[in-house]
Length: 113
Image (cartoon, rainbow, N blue to C red; front, side):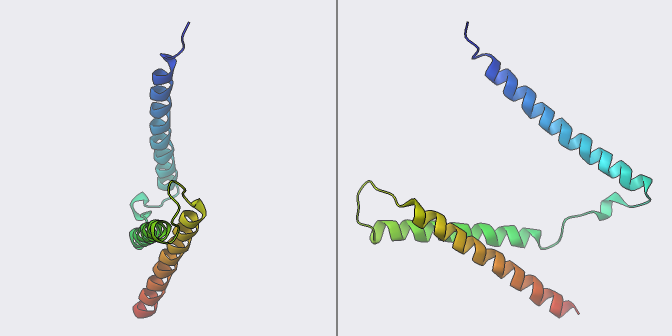
């Protein structure tokens, strides 16, 4: 007896449970905030969150591009990839993106004072 038909059912049930759980917990959190006299609409994300994610992803993309160019031009081995170059440059440029985001945030806060 094959149990392959259980995989789509399990995935569907798991996805439904995850989405239901997210909405249920968010609703409970909002109700608790209302009971304590807080306004749940004021609990919005930071304004620079999009900047942080954008610079992180740009940095990771630049790191991946530079790693590919380095691997193709400097490592003249056919069929062999060097994963250390990819991981290290993604981490370096992602960190530079986060550092740039921090620097922009600090400049904004200094200007705001």
